[in-house]
Length: 447
Image (tube, rainbow, N blue to C red):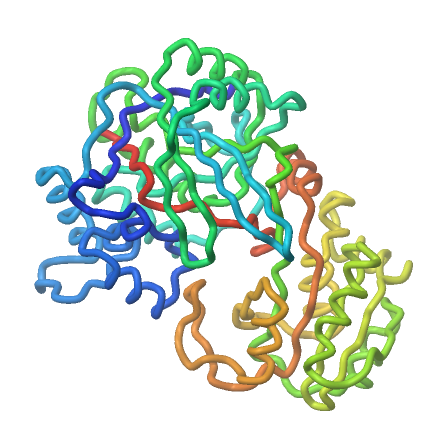
């Protein structure tokens, strides 16, 4: 059962901070060094000081987590952040543009009872990393708050919970913020107990699949367990819940963008050399030369619409290769991924990393690649090379050119649901739900 509850969230008092756009931020894991500096400069109260504190002017005994907690406490004491007076569910719409088409993604933010993965009706779909979980644990432990909503999707053909909540905010003016990508974020407060109860009852039998925020969900589970071991807490304490943005899986604004790879640690290779290594498992087609051919190659991949078709760029001879999986490759993948579901084995990113990089090219332990979603950025990085600093995902750049890069299809919503239900995890960065949810719209206290 998905246990959905209203909560008294903390929100910025706009009479004291000015524009909501100046105090919100993207999730911590997509903020670059430059982006962090820009957010710091926007406002003394930008939420980046909580979710990704830079640690400047720290005293010897302080940590970035303690500094974030101090900011949070001070902002509450000074009325910069104020708690809503009654239990609230927060309707959240995002309006954005992709390839010239405008979308609106509708959802709502609520407290959801924590269920450890594999023991309830909440499912993960991607792998997590211990170092990131440790970082988020220390922050959540210090602040005793959910500072950013987790992104969850659920299946309801009638979108009943959303319609119930949206009906409660008809003709009401939202709080609005616009982010650096031009995405409009609208937030409404629903306090009608009848509407909230009806939406919660409708959500009760529904499974929730974590679309984004796996590290924070697992961290919230650990925080709950630690608190309950350490002290006596009443039943249904706030620590038993975490803040999730719930979006219907059939929402027309649920857009998944591709996550292309530019590989670090891979040596120079011509298109002929790549074709020779892939030919036993893939039909390879030379598409031509020149970095600007990226758009044409991506169109070719999209037209085929198959996870198993991808396009590679080889810098050594400035050439592109379109690779289509053959039956022989499918059979090899079955052997490499024994015990994995057919859906997992057919994922483009699984084929790329397991079959191609590890098995056919013989690479093990490569550094994390540079992940890119847009073709223009992809082309720009092929021209300029890697940066010699940490990227937005926290990976250290090399300062070198990328010798090999790949355009790969994103996993679908159906893939997410199928693999999650099977109890499996996708490879890292298999999905990129666009746009990201803002941090700072509402904060969920755990005490």
